[in-house]
Image 1 (cartoon, one colour):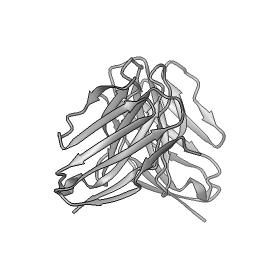
Image 2: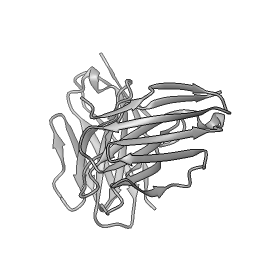
Image 3: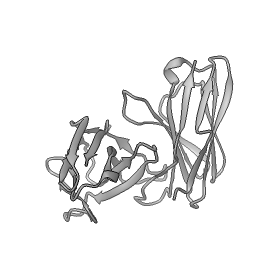
Image 4: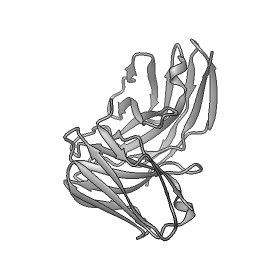
Length: 117
Length: 113
């Protein structure tokens, strides 16, 4: 079974600064996918960024980027130029290689990020 | 912006009531999921439906009964719940083939009194 650990229950950052959220996972799989999801106070969970384990290049999406260290089983999220709208719960999630049963995610416990003006 | 809707958004029910949660996706996906989100625990996968067949049941108590009549609709039937079942119930959908992300609904906040 896979486990995902987010060691920072809460974090805060000043607007326009950079913050990094940590995530580690445990798996015996070699082919898998990692995700960061964001859940703002309105509760709609949305995808922030995705990383395929077979890709060495770190994924980036505008102000969001990841530092994927496969050997260390680490998958951190960096948010640059933080904005007030980034205030949310952030969940790290693991998905092993898809099968006909659908794409089942294992989530970490979440990190509550507050961006301060 | 969301292609996944859930109703009702809030529900209060007694322990002897029977109620149902509804989820609908408008994204053409063929897999749907129910999650439970409690304050003290990570998101817990409850059920997975792939092409309208249930393929995963993570040891969920029988007082929760899912139904997937077609690829666009998913229900969670509730009966004789316990106070510890109070939580946010999230529905999600995805394509079952490939590493496609799941799209989530806004959730139903359930309170069992």
